Every structure is written in C-alpha cells, then in structure tokens.
Amino acid sequence: MIRFREGRRGDIAEVLALLADDEYGAQRETAPLETYLVAFDAMQAEGENWLIVGERDGRIVATYQLTFITGLSHRATRRAHVESVRVASDLRGQGIGRAMMEDAEARARAAGCGLLQLTTQKGRNRARDFYDALGFTPSHIGYKRRLS
Image (cartoon, rainbow, N blue to C red; front, top):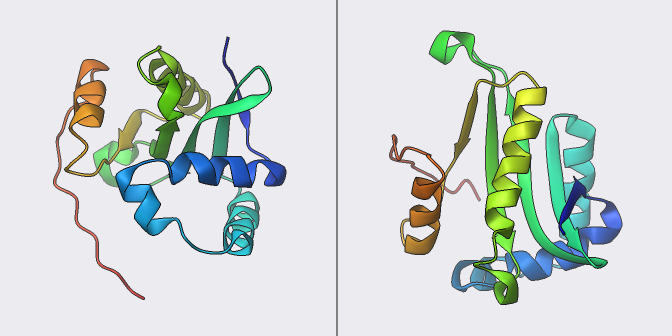
C-alpha cells in the first residue's frame, strides 16, 4: 500500500535519489544537497507549489511536484502542473505511477483546478505511453530556454 503525503525537508535526499535514478536525472541532479534544500524552502514559501512523496513500508518510493496556477486562458481555468514524476526503478510496472497520478488529480480537483497538465522529455517513450494510457492528450510542443 502506498501512502501519498506532502514532502518534508528531511525527505529531500531520498527524493533526489529518485530524481537521479534515470538517464536524464543522473546528468542534471548533481548540485550539492544544500542547493535542493534552499529550493524546497522556496517552494514551501510559495504556498501553491508542493512536493508530494509516496511511501511504502517507510521508504519513499515515488515523488512528484504539483503546482497550482491561476490564469486567464482557457476561460480562466485554474490548472495544476505536474512535474518531476518518478517511481523507484525496482518498483515500476506495479501500479504506483497510476496511483500517483490519481493522487495528483484528486489534489488538483480539491484545489479547484479544471485542467491537469504535464510535460515529459521527448525521449521518454515509456512515460509517453503511460500518460497516453491515463487519458492525457499530447496537445502542445514545449520549449525551454536556459537563462543561466
């Protein structure tokens, strides 16, 4: 049984291990722990930016970040943005990801959101298949530009 809860500062090292446990994360999650702790503190101060963790038997086995965004587009639909979705590599394929996305949707609905959105790396074919199976629509092309 997985229990999802808001992440705490003391969870950051375990969350980082999940984020770094793939080909993309291993290359980019290399900053000192303090950098991530400062970012977590900033997320907490923002108020609508949540780190969520999934625990099983005292171990953090899944994580995602959920941010609520109020805007004008789509008839002023409040949206929830999901990112940094990870399940421990030894537990993938067991329904944890589905449960995690159900948790994200429930939190989004409770916050008054009418849209749940996410992005994924183009090369993450299994992730794209997963999101398709959950009913997400690949409706946009995303762009990023590094500022530093």
